[in-house]
Structure formats: C-alpha cells, structure tokens
Image 1 (spheres, rainbow, N blue to C red):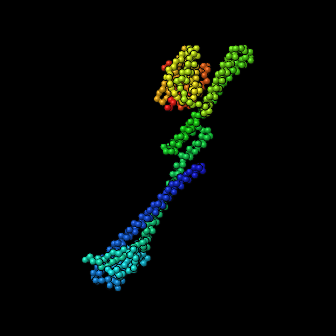
Image 2: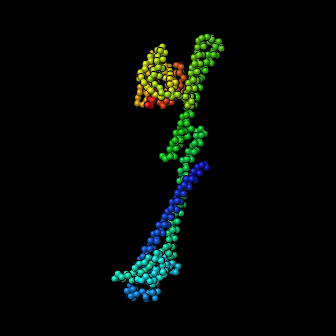
Image 3: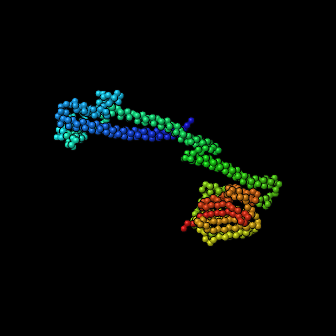
Length: 467
C-alpha cells in the first residue's frame, strides 16, 4: 500500500498535469471561438457584399427602364422582391428543407435603404451614417443615380447563422471535453509511473535504516530519479564498507590490546607461582610490555583526535628545510648505533604554512617506521625538493620491502605486513595512519612506493606557502 506521502506526491503530479491540460483546453476554446466568430462574420460579410452588388445591378437596370425611383417608392412589393431574390441564395434557405421559413428569415429589408442623389431617403428606414455603409449607384455612363445603404451587422443575425455558430462552438466544447477526459486517463497511470521509482527508493531506505546494507536498487533510467537510485546504491555500499571497517577496527584493537595484557598477566602469574623469580630481568620484561601498551593507547588517542577533528593545529609560516634538517641531525647518532646510515638532501629554503609540532610528529612517525622495519646494516635517505606549487619529501629506506599489492594498505590502521614487518619490532601499526591524517590536515597527499634502496619510499607532497 502506498504511503500518504507518495499518494500526496502522485496527487500533486496528477493535479499539475490536469491543470496544465485544463488551461490548454480553455485557451484553445477561447482562441478558437474568437477566431471562428471573426472568420464567420467575415464570411457573412462577403456574402452580403455579393448580394448588395446584385441588388445594385438590378436597381441600375430598374432606373434605366423607368427613368426615376418614383415608381419603386410607390410599389414596395417590387422593392421587396428585388431584395429577397438577391439575398435568397446566401441567407434565405433553411438548412433542413431548403425553403425560406418565418423562423430563420433574416429580414434584409430592415437593413437596406435607398436614397437619391439629393440625399433624400426613398426606401427603407433612416440609419446613422456611422452605422451604414453607402454604395453609389452608377449608370452605364458613370453618372451617380442614387445610393444604396446597408446597415452594418453587429452580431450574427438570423437563427440559421446563430444555430450554425452554436453548432461549431458545441463541437469545439465536445472536442475539448474529450481531450480533457483523455488527458486525465493518461495522467493517472503516468503519475503512477513517475512515483513508482520513488516508492522503490522509499522502501529500500526503510530496509537500509533497519540494517540491511546489502539492499540495491536497479537503475533503469538516466534521469534525476536514476541518478538518485545510483547515489542510493553508492550510499549503501559506503555504509557497508564503513560497518565492516568499524567491525574490523574493533577486532584489531581487541587483538592488539589483548597481546600485551596477556603477556603481562603471564609474567605476573609466573612470578606469583614461583616459576619465575622476581628480579631485574622480570621487571625489564614487564616494563617493555607496559611501554608497548602505553604507545598503543597513545597512538589510538592521537588517531581518535584526528578523526573527530579535535586535534588542534597552530598554522604559521614554517621553513620546512630548517625543521626537517634539524630533526634528522638529532636522529643521526641514534641510528648510527643501530648500524643504520642516515643521509639527506634538502634545499636551503622550503617555506610552507603548517604546524611545527604536528610536522615534527609526522617526521617522527616516518622515522620510526623506517627504523623498525629496516634490516641492519641498512640505510635511510631523505630528500626534499620544490615541485611547482608543492614541496615533495621522499623518505626511503633499505630492505626489506613489501609486495606491490600491499602498498595501498600500509596506511590502514593496525595493518602490518607479515612476517618482516611485525609486532615484535615494537610498532603499533598506527604510525602511518597518523602520518596520513597529519598530511591531509595540511592539504597534502601521501603514498607508498618501492624504494631504489630496496625497501620502502614514502612520498609526501605538501603545498608551498603562497606569496
């Protein structure tokens, strides 16, 4: 059963189409009626002109035969017969019987007048000159022998004309009514057709809110509704991926926390049972597990702050060359003790807008990743350069490397490549994720590649300071 909202929408679509059709039909009816009235009036006027021309010719013949209008003014039946014979074909036949009838008789006598050259009325009724069209009656010699006047027709006059006009108007009304009914019959299913995709989207949305993230809509058109269905499918897909990522995140966190806690529990229980003596060796082992646990919790806290936008950034003008070179200088001695050679190639000035503290945290995470996952003896090479509007930092280390399929996953949370890059090296699996968040907070990009040194290269691109 369709919901009230959809019923309302379908009803609105129906009313919209119906109103448009009604407006169109009414407009056509008015325009057609006006056009018909004008055309029909012109048609009648043409017939009257023909009849008046015939009367004029007969009057001229009568005047030539009698020499004056005197006899015609005395014999009015002669005048009536002359007029009716001229008007008969056009105006005085019944549409049914073809014979003149009293009902449809147009009475042309009432509109015709005859006056002599002295402007004296001979036959007919007096009419206003503004309402009457006067035609001169000319003899064969071109002399004016009188004037024939016809009162202008203001409306469709006789019953036959009115009946014909009424019949035409009724036909237009019937045609309009049929068109109106047909449009209504077409609009009802068509509005249902338009609402049907919305109904499917509404039903799918309800399933989505109930947790069914596998729902998918069939995209059967390329219009706005088809685009909406496609966007809905993409939304369902993203929600499913986010749910799976969150579930995996919870599972990974539980696993990461369980390992150091289990180690601590085993060490303490062994000491309590007298299996392992309490001494410096035991305390050192406990301290290492606690340090690893503290590092994991600290990284999780930093990552959660970054995700929620709570990590503060104090943006200012920074000379990245000085900042990076100073950090690397401080790490060189420590790495040398681990038989890792550190080299760098940095230009003297690389200005950008950034947070000095967070950029230092970025360098620390990149260094820890290289330090923990580089075999000894090994090497680390850091280069920086200006490229167009960006600053590029390439952080490379020696073997081991990772498979090409693993490169995009290195920035996933708690992701490790086994067996070379594992938990025993002390990493939480969150360093590169934190580095990615810091880079993106500076409107930059970060990606992993294979290194020419045999290990991994991290390419960081940060925008230069705008002058």
